[in-house]
Image (cartoon, rainbow, N blue to C red; front, side, top):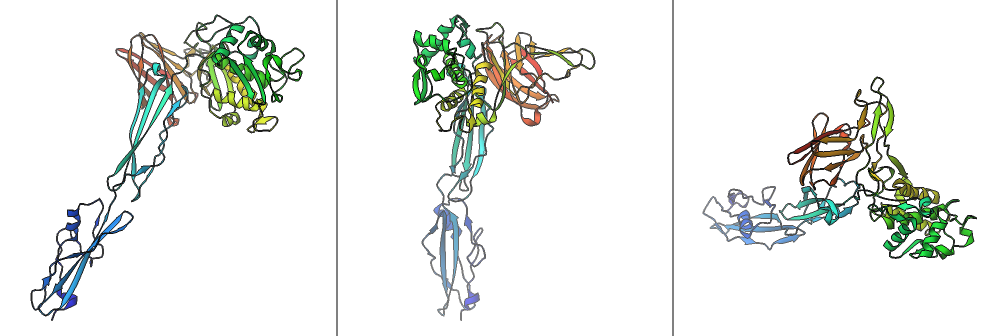
Length: 521
């Protein structure tokens, strides 16, 4: 007699597991048909009275639920007396031929020249059959030729891999626009003075009228401030140019433009003072900013942030590319205190509130915010987007005045000269380090959070630039293409944990330079 509970014994082959064992086998990767058949395995049986026979295995259809698959194989053993016993095994596996989906890779972006490159974000992915692994597979920072409009290209790549080996990739390209070597603006008062002499960055032969006409031509022949229904229009003709000169500067507070669309030569009496000047300082500053943007193509894209920006005069004036070096003069004996500052930087401030309200975070965005304010876009008198008209006017004035008569941008939130000499006894701290034939200058020096190196190489080639702590710990390195006797600006944002004195080295072929950038800390 066949004992059902004991008479059938299934022999386990290597790497084979039977259903009556607690955990059936699981195939994690997408298996082949042969692998599935091997996992289902074979069986033999024993009996106390005879040699039982085992039937051909019976395989169930493959069961599917999402990405999970399973199949069961069943055997039946029969002895000479007709007694039977059964056993079965189930194999589970994952069937996933679909690549994971990267969900939050950052979009490619073009940054303004002085904008900070964002840190790489944490990228994640989803998959129908589990949680994929995402790794950053590339992060290159390469120089570019400014003939393309960009001086730096950063490419980042990520790869997502699921449990079955399926992969997907994503990339981000960050292009940094070339910085204008200098920006030229003029104040309301300058535009309101006939017979002035103005520079567009390369040519200082413009009269006030000629500069206004050039700017209006660059606007396509017509400049409008405000918005439809509350606007002032200036066309490129002698009459409108004369009226701009006659009616600037604006004064007597900041208000919306009166209802109506006016030509600059046909402003109502309510919008003019007794001296025939525009009775609205926000309107005057906005007209001035529009003229400055038309006169200097690099101004519109100048990136803004909340804080104070610093500018320096230019060695040689109009057409120069070299900022004047700020020099901090100290007593050469104790207490080594600051005595004077040579070529001190100019500074202007953009408030956090105004920055938050900018539709785009650059001068073009500030011009748009001022126009919305003049046009009363939000319908609230005295403010726009929650910002007072006076605060908007102050921000516009900061740009008009910050680069007045052509200035070089130095940086944001630049540290002042230290109150005592960081290197006692030498009498001064200048920003320039010169190696034989290779000139490297750090601006600003001291720095607050970031600085730029101006590299002027005697030969064309590739500059290798490294940054170290004063203790010799390397912080970063990069490469930039340089052209002989031409300035190349290399911005560097110092990681917060390293914001102390920074040592830089620059190598171009056989030419070398080394210097120290000071921190106020």
